[in-house]
Image 1 (cartoon, one colour):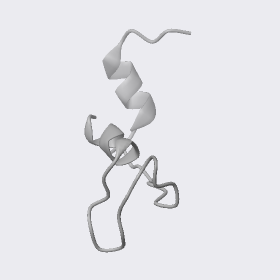
Image 2 (tube, one colour; image 1 turned 120 degrees about the vertical axis):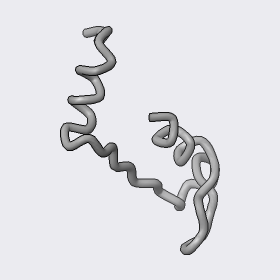
Image 3 (spheres, rainbow, N blue to C red; image 1 turned 180 degrees about the horizontal axis):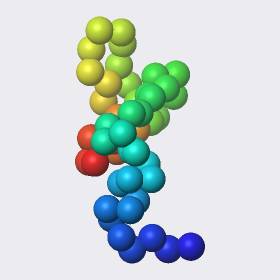
Amino acid sequence: MEITDSTALARDLAPTGVLRASINLGTPVLARGTRGCTPTGASPAWPRTW
């Protein structure tokens, strides 16, 4: 199924208007960081694009 309506997609992913994301720092290929600092890498970058 292809979703072409970005408004409908946003409503499905974040029905309250806020997209929440969880980042697993246990996989250094996808995310790097420590407690108290902003994580870097591919996984943390993806939610920021929304």
